[in-house]
Amino acid sequence: MTAPISKQDVAHVARLARLSLTDEELDQFTGQLGAVLDHARDVEALDTAGVPPTAHPLPIRNVYREDELEPALDRDEVLAQAPSVEDHKFRVPRILGEAP
Image (cartoon, rainbow, N blue to C red):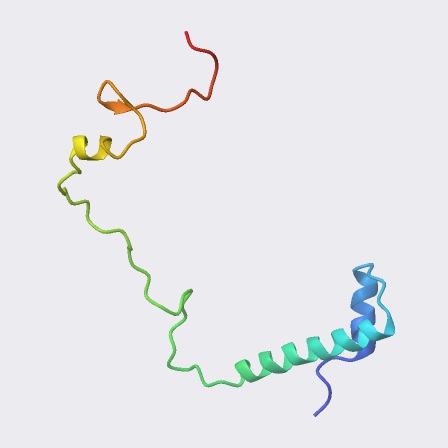
């Protein structure tokens, strides 16, 4: 079996992409690209005759639940937990502008 990609191929592609690579980088990328091409060859060799084409390996379904009415928290109980309350509402520091 021949190597899936040569160092000269990688250097040629690097030149086309205007990338300057050192010899060590050429060796590294030649090995990495060869591994990727080997894996692609392995996948290509699989018998997928009975496998329908799909965009996702798992069935996609709506993950939202139905909107169900549930009892609300007791307002007085919630406001009792707040550090400051005014007119039966949360009182918070002003963050924009001055007081009218």
